[in-house]
Image 1: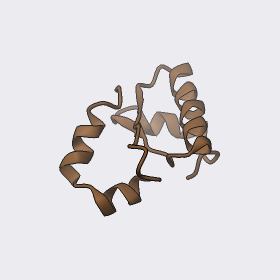
Image 2: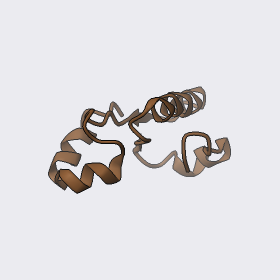
Image 3: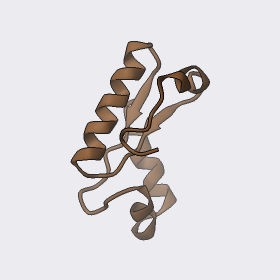
Image 4: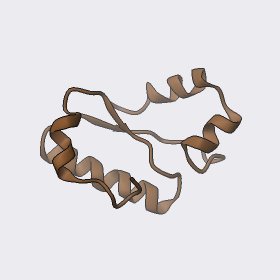
Length: 80
């Protein structure tokens, strides 16, 4: 969906789930994740933000170099 594609009307559909935002590891992605997280917060929907290691640019890149187990460990630090 990209950093600017989130629609507020999706919140109700996401409410039953554990949501972790995993946008690109650049300034646009980090700013977009913060912006989307504020929307979730305004509606009292829990959300976490995944902080990727500096050496990877996005989740796809993460899986090219890291394992699913490492990703699971990273998810535990996402804050939701």
